[in-house]
Image (cartoon, rainbow, N blue to C red; front, top):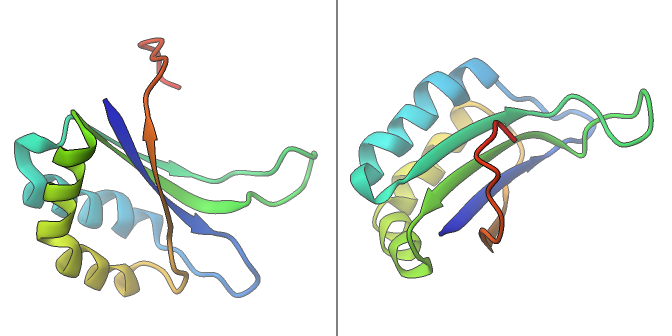
Length: 109
C-alpha cells in the first residue's frame, strides 16, 4: 500500500478553510477517484514540536492506494480538476509526497 500525502505549508498570511477542505474537496477526491482510493484522511495542524510553536503544515491530506501505479493513474486522470479546486480553500501551494506504508497499527494514527 502507498500513501499520497498532500501537505499545505503554514506561513504568515496563509489562509485555509478546513470545513471546505474536509466537506467539499475531500468528497470530490473520493467521488473522482472512486474504488482506486482505499483510504482517505484529513488532518488539521495544531502545533509544532516546541510548546506554543505553530504547526509546520496548516493541513495534511492522506490518500491510500494499492500501488504506486494505481495512485499515479487515479491522480493523473483527475489532477487538473483537483488542483483547480485548491484556490477555493487555501492560498498556499501543497507539497506532495508519495510513501510506502511499512507499518499500520490499525489505530487512528
